[in-house]
Length: 331
Ligand code: F6P
Image (tube, rainbow, N blue to C red; front, side, top):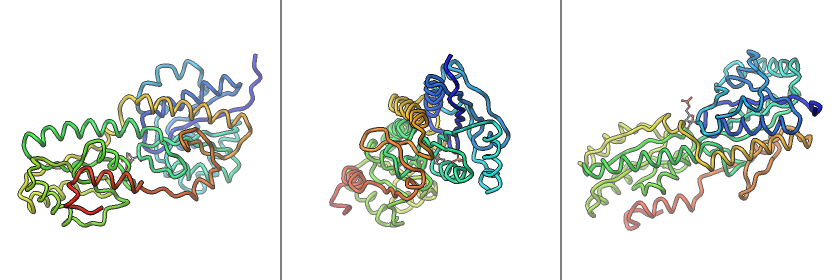
């Protein structure tokens, strides 16, 4: 009989991402293997405030790995957003004897974790967001599945767009991050990409390119528009009016967040989940787990927030060069 080394709680927070279940499973199983009790918290930070925590066994996380979503449920908690909410959450963690809270989520969830750590709770973060927009890590759980889902959907759109010789504006997720749009831009060979980090509102130039593409014999075109730019229906109307090319808008929306995680999402989520427990076992405090130069690593949570991330200029250039005849657009 292994002596209990301590209590770990794990939660998923913010927008769900395929692979979150794999990460929870890894935290639970590695935790048990190393002699910890692991509690699953339901509905993100709300679950702490509402004391929705239960001890998880090895079998409780069976048959979860291959499913998208999060079996712990997720939420964006208004109460936890307030200072009193964090204070209350810390008190409840103490009441339950929770030594460490593992938070699987995005930037917003990590800000909550960082602020909770000021009240004495040890927090460890695992990046889970389809947006890939967390500066300290090259990889976030869910991006790979989401971008493949979007890519397949855009392939389908291109087929119908081709048959009707139309232009297709397709909106992919990413309120303030254009990584899904950038990757689909390259993977789907889009004729145009609009990213929140890069787009300068020069719709005239976009329309000019679409016109010239058509004149040069392109029968159909796909413009990938990030959610952060939005207004896809009015953009489609504007393109149609200015170019005379029939144009339709499609908003892929939340379907990009569902689906069985890819091997990459399952594997990276599992590695980061196990690694989170390893660093807890080493006595590390207030760290975020991520990938750097292709390997799993951890960084101080406060340092992580000082890091900046932008769209890779070279990838952006590649997307533009490959999708649009270079004589029409200087990049
Ligand atoms: O952060 C993930 C994400 O899917 C973003 O791409 C998107 O802007 C946002 O969540 C949508 O949030 P909600 O599901 O609350 O509408």
